Length: 461
Ligand code: GLY
Ligand code: MN
Ligand code: MN
Image (tube, rainbow, N blue to C red; front, top):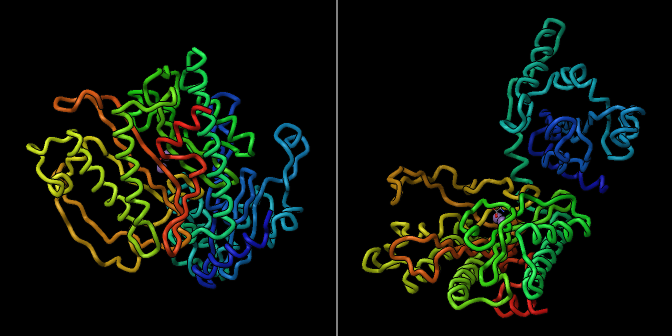
C-alpha cells in the first residue's frame, strides 16, 4: 500500500474541486450471483484509484483541503470468521493514510455535518444506483437544521469529470502495473497458442475451453486477481461474432482461433487479441487477410504519438483495410468505386464494423473524454453515409504522453454473395496496448508476437 501515492491523488482531486468543495466516493456494491453466492467483489475504480482499499461497504469523503474520511466495515469477530479480516475504523488511518475513519453504520449520521458549509458536493453521477437519493437525504437532513445555523451546499457537481481527466493520464506507477499486466497476458496468449498446436499434433480433441483454461491458469499463477473482461476464445466462424465468449466450440485443424483476453492486475486491465492458425500454420487465404490486418495495425501504430488525434489511428487503419478489401476482391470496384468512395460511403463496414481502439486503464474501456476539451465549442454536423442519421462531430482528443489506448483493427468475413469463398468465415483481429509517448508509443503487449513467421515459430515449439 503506497499511502502517499493515494494521498497525492486525493490532493490533486481536491485542487480541482476548490477549497470549499467536498467529494463523496462509494466503492462498488456487492452483487449476488445466486442464492448464498456472490460475484467476486471488485472495488469501484474511482474509489480504488483514490485509496487502494479493497474491502466492500466503504465510502471516502474528501474535502477541498485533501483531508479524507473513510467509512468502512466495523470490526466484528463473528463476521470476520466467515468473511475475512477487516481493517476496521480504528486501524484504518494508520493502515491507509486517511485522516479519520468511522464505521459505515455511522454514514447517515455523520454525512450532513461533513457537508455543512461546503459550496459544492461532488459525487459520481449516474454510476451508482441510489447514490443521488442518498445524497438528497443528507442534504435534506442538513436543510432541516437551517434554523439552527447549518448551511447547505448550493451545487451538486459530477465527480466523474475531474476524476476521468486525472485517470486518463497514467502516472509512472500505473504504467508500471500496466506493463506487468501486459506481460502476463502476453505469456497467457503464447501458452494458449502452443497448447492448441500441440494438442492437435497429438491427435487430441481441442475445445475453446481448453485454451480458456490455459489463459486463466497463466493469469492467476502470476497474481492477477481476475480476467479484465470475459475472455473471447473463438474458433473458426465464431471469430466473426464480435462479443463471442469462450465456450465449448471445437477448435478444428485448418481453422483460425481468435483470442481476445487480458488479465487485470492490481486494478489495471490489459487487453490483447491474437488470431492464429489452430494447427500452427497459416493457410494461403488466412495469411493474406492476416497480413492485411497487420499492415493496417502498423499504419495505426505509426501515427500514435503525442499531438496526434485519438481518431488518427482509426483513420490510418481504415485506409489500409479499405484498399486491401478492393485489392482482394472483398469489395467490387465496379460497385463501390474508388478507395475514397469506400471510405466516404463506409463500404468497408461490411467487414470492419468497430472502432480501432479505446482508452485502457483501470477499466478495460477506460474513462476519459474522447473529444478535445480545449475545443469544446467546435462542432460540425454530417449525414452518415450508411444510416442517413445526422451525426454531430466534435474535434477528437489530442493524444498526450501517458495516455494508454488499444490499437485493434480487424476483419470479419461473413459469407455473402460476391465475397470470395476462400475468405468465408474468417475473422481476424490484432490488438495491442499502447502507451503514448512524446515521440510515438510503447506497445506493452508485444510479449506475444504478431508477425506470421514468429507465430508459426512459437507454435512449432
Ligand atoms: N476486449 C474488449 C475490447 O477489445 O474492447
Ligand atoms: Mn479492446
Ligand atoms: Mn480486446
